[in-house]
Structures are given as structure tokens and as C-alpha cells.
Length: 162
Image (cartoon, rainbow, N blue to C red; front, side, top):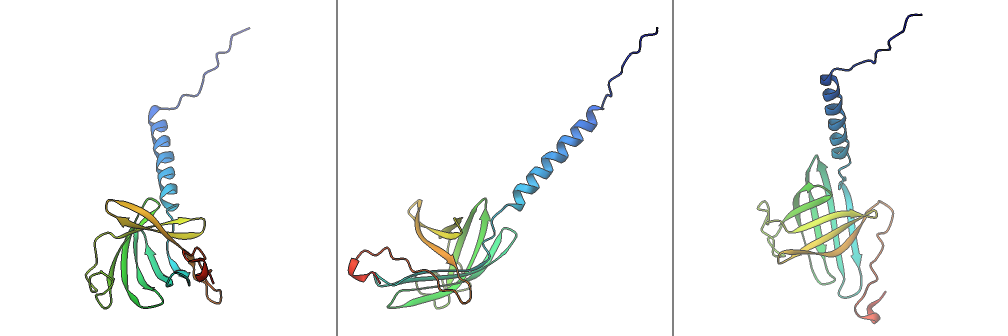
């Protein structure tokens, strides 16, 4: 009886290299497509402690974000435009003011990098720059038509809690 020799299929090294390259490129494009979307209308409201209201309308195109902002207390308010860039999971934002107030340059001149925003548990969390560090500030909720934005009830003066 003649012995049969089994031959293993041999793939050229080039085929393996191409396959590995395709897998790596698919993985990186999947990661890029997972970048968070900051687009939408976002709002924060606090009645107590002189009030604090913040509204952002963001439009994202790739890693660029543009939009409008308004901020107010129970005494006064300001508004203007913003522009930003998404890097990783963080949005870096610069502002300008429609009236040149609130320590921002008058539009269309934008301030240097001022704030960071991150999506956390369905909220848009603002981090403000203090010196060389960023500190958590407020958490904005999606502003959905017909639905009231929840008020922040973390008040310094307990008598102000409404």
C-alpha cells in the first residue's frame, strides 16, 4: 500500500500581511465611528443661589462643532456663539459674545480654549478651566421640546431650595 503524504495548504506571507492590515484598518475606523456626538440642544437650570441658567445649541460635523450659547442668572444674562473641536471623548470649546460682555471677546473673535465638555450618563458635563486644571462645573440635560429641563436642587442656602 502506498503511503499518502498530506500536504498542508500554505498561504503566502503577503496574504497574511494584507489580512492583518485590513483587520487593523477596520478596527481603527470602528473606533473613529464611536466618537461621541455632541449635536443637539442642551440646558442647565438652577433657581436657587441667585439662579444659573445655561443653554447650548450644538451642531457637529466630523470633529468640528459650532453653535450658540446663552447663560444667565436671576439678575442678568449674556449670549453668543461657540466653536469647538472633538478630541477623543472631549469637546474643547471657545466662545465669543454677541455684546462683548461676560469676559468673552465680541463675535466673531473667539476666546482661547475655555471649557471642556464630556458626555456622561446621558448628560453633557461642563469642565471649566481654573489655572492649568479643569474642574467639573454643571451637567446639562438634553432640551427636548415639550419636556421641562430638571432643576439642579444643590443649593448652598437651604432656604433657597425651591
